[in-house]
Length: 128
Image (cartoon, rainbow, N blue to C red; front, side):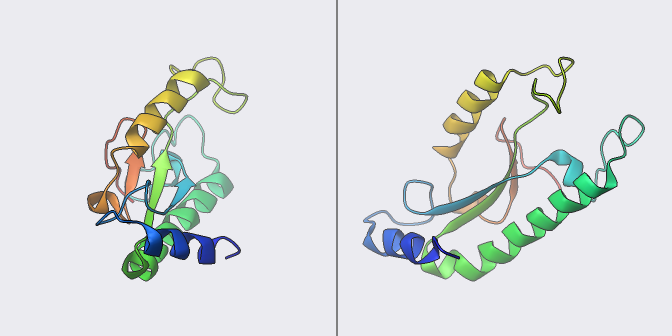
């Protein structure tokens, strides 16, 4: 809420048409673990509190995408993939550096098409 006036101002002052990260964007870091449709890897790690928090974040993203579209603000949830971190463990296939580079590249390509969606580091659209 503190940044919303600045995002609206950036969108109004932009000469770009449509929605993009270059104009104004709210990007929420989510997880495929928050997908209600897929519920991936339940057998490996249940983590219902984590999953519920990410599902709630995804709903917030979807709501904001509807509310702020007319203001010119792109809203998207991002799945970073399975990353080698303390939470992801050494078993994860991606390094922080690889994932960061992929996400930065993906962000430069986001458009109105991805507004209100759940996008992966690999540009795949994931189910809610």
